Image (tube, rainbow, N blue to C red; front, side, top):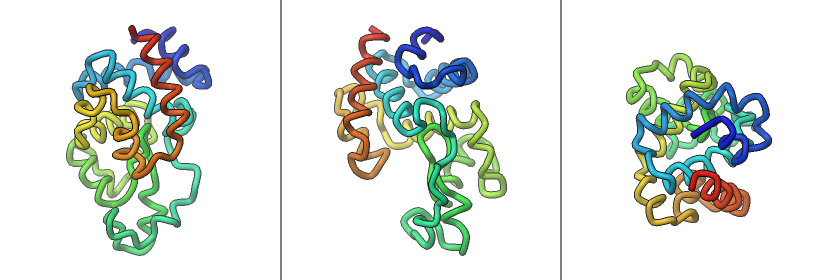
Length: 171
């Protein structure tokens, strides 16, 4: 993907597109997001979850995740400490631990590492691969991709619009 293509897909990224271009391409290569369909799906989801590369840390405090055992948040303060970070908003102690193992980072000690462009991209690639999303992207099933990332269909209309744009740009 070129810088011009990334700007066509995510025009709100502005100058941040330059910062993310190389790490996004590297993460897509590392995690097998290697066809136009997979890339369009991945970039649409990343575009929505990150506000088109403007946010690598969830805007909310994370207090809503406090005590969420399904996320591994079992220690007081985990909700805020392990709120969404990275381009796909890795959330919860358990996800940070698994992501850290996969990427060779101590994310339990330093969760803010996922805010750096390279790790924000790699964590998104890891999450994508670990949830089997290439298969759903190959089938063009954006609703199921969204459900695996978000747990529901929050922002589906925007995700679909980004997907359609990315399909055209990457064709």
